[in-house]
Length: 189
Image 1 (tube, one colour):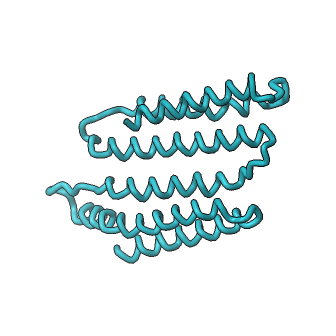
Image 2: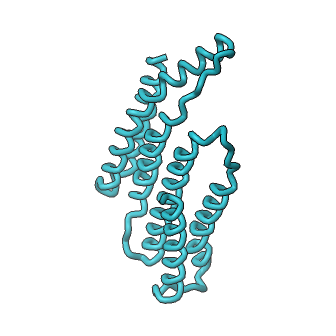
Image 3: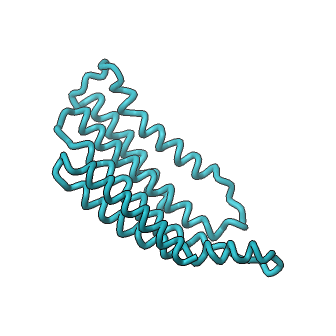
């Protein structure tokens, strides 16, 4: 289902660019307009190609859903950025700065939800060092992920602050989120 969603986002982005270029009232001969309209949809196409080009091996089956989630959110964020740039090009007065906390917030939430799926298995014949390293990784994933979810949700709220406070709020929440996540990740190990 996520694969279909990724394709739909790419199709919608290309269709939006074509519509705006021909019927949206933009001057297509203006410098950089065509590149701005189509660079992100082409990048989205490359992301989908790279997703399907990742070798599908049986040893990585448990990571498949995690990779799908990561690529899906990446395509979603690129779509949001593309729609914001189109509004900006059309001189609609759209505050493009609000896309930064929305994009980063979605990425943090997706990362926090995906990280616990990447637990390391410890083979029975592994060394003590390998066992302890895998144990520390597995114990630190969930405490590291919780602040990322809270920080991602807080960043989504930062997008709706007054225009002059968006960047300050975003950077404050980002710093607090990363410091808290690292603290909880280290504390459990």
